Image (cartoon, rainbow, N blue to C red):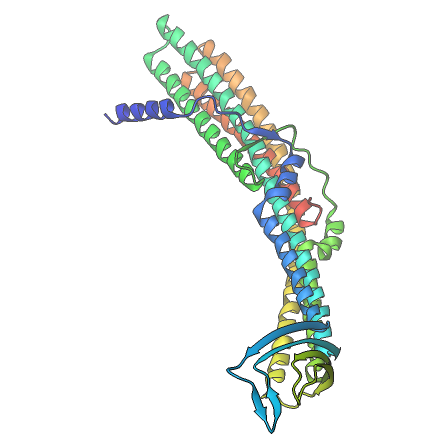
Length: 420
C-alpha cells in the first residue's frame, strides 16, 4: 500500500512539473565571481556603507564651514503705536535679514573631519574584505556545481555497470545456469544506483541554485569549462602577505582611527571663535532700527567645566583604542593561522587525491576481474556486486578528493588575499 501511494505521488509530481524549463545559464569560474561582485547583496551593502561614511565626512566638514541663513517677516498691528507724537510701531511692518556665520577657530571640528576620513578609509577596507569574502563564496559554490557533475557521472557509470550485470544475470537464469537470487540481487543493485543518480541530480540542482543566489541572479547557474585556479603562493610568501590581507588592513585602519581620536582629545578643551555678520532691512524704520544696516560680532567660547564629560570621553576613547589594538593583533594571528592551515590543506588534499586515484584504478581493475571470473563461473554474483559497489565508492571518493583539492587551493588563495 505504501509503495503504491509513493508511486502515485511521484507520478503526480512528475505530471505537475513544468515542461520545457530552460536549462540553467552556464558560466565560467571567472564569470561567476564577476557576477557575484556585481550583484551580490552583501558586497552591494558594503559599497553603500562606503557611500554613507563619505556622507558623514561631508557632514563633519559643515561644522567648520561658513553658513548663511535668511529670514523675512511681516507684522500687522490693530493700529499704529504713537508716543509723544512719534511713531513707535507702524501698523504694517516688513523686516528682512541675513546671518553669515564664519567659524574662525574650531579645533575640535577640524579634527573630527580628519578622524571621519580615517574611518572612511577603514570602511573602504572592510568593503574590500567583503569583496574577498563574496568572491570566495562564489568560487566555492562554482566548484560545488563542478564537482557534483563528476559525482553524477560516477553514479551513471555505476548504473550502467549494474544494468549490464543484471542483464547478464537474467540471461544466465533464463538459460538455466544462474539462479533467481542472482537476478534479484543484480536488480536490487540497479535500483540502488538509480536512486543514487536521482539524489546526485537533486544535489546538483541545489548547488546550481546556491550559485545563482551568490551571483545575485534570479535563476540557477551552471558551471562551464574547467575550474582553472591560479597557483597559490608559497607558505612563506603567504605568511609575509598575511598582514596585508583586506580584513587585517581594515582592523589596522580602525586601530589608527582610534589612536587619532585619543590623540585629538585635547581639542575638547580648546576655545573656539566664531564671527557673525547680519545685514538687515526694516520698513518702516523705527527709532531703534533704521531702514537698513548691519551688525558684526565676534564670539569666543572657552569651555571651563562640563561636569566631567570630557574626562569620561577620553577614558572611553582610550578603551576603544585598546580594543582595536587587541583586534588587530588577533586579526594578524588569525590570518597567519589561516595561511598555515590552508597550505597544509593543499598538501594533504593533493596527497589524498593521489591515493584515491590509485584506489579508483585498482577498484576498476577488480571489477573487471570479478566480471570475468563470474562469467567463467569461478565466483558468485556477490563478488561482482561487491566489486561494483567498491568501484562506485572509489570513483565517488576520487571525485570528492578532486573537489577537496580544488577547494583547498581556493581557500589558500583567499587566505593569502589573492582572491579575486
